Length: 258
Image (tube, rainbow, N blue to C red; front, side):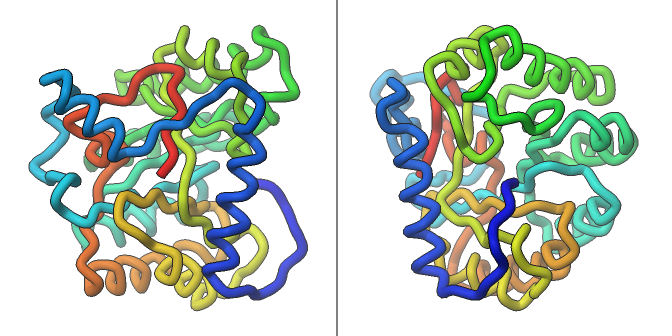
């Protein structure tokens, strides 16, 4: 959720920029990302895995995970209405301060309606700039706040800006959190143009993909119905991140990226 200059550009460029930034973030930090396909394959070869994550077989179906960062916010209830109408599950990486603590009833609704509730830190500090105790504070405060509301602590987290390293991975492992990055971003923080947000997502979408959006920006939620309708038309099946990895289970500390 970082700022850059507004400007329109084609979705293939979006995908390349996103991929390059993630490669730069992960290179040289001792973190080896795992793809959803690798997670499923490992589970199959081990004859074990998470299981129980739903009937969708993402080894066969063209699955994609819709994820939302930095909420909940004022538009999240409307987003939940859309997802309910479209019968689409999503994964919400929630921000603690001024979000989880401000909208506890929305957090509970996200969980009650079957979406995956995940951790996006307490104050959105860049975790690679922090020492281990500070990383732990950012994650554990949000863990506890969500647990108090939903009765269950998250098992997934997304580091702000996708920035992670060995320290972040070690602390995440201690807290039982897998790290989830993405393959598609509409950079919706840089535009309020819902049509552009929709086009960027549908142009860059691929099987086993993870879409990054933010339900706190004005142009995003209005773009969601069109994204869902077009991707369904193209044969995609929407799943949560755990469903994307199943029968594998997200392992604490591990970084997952399509």
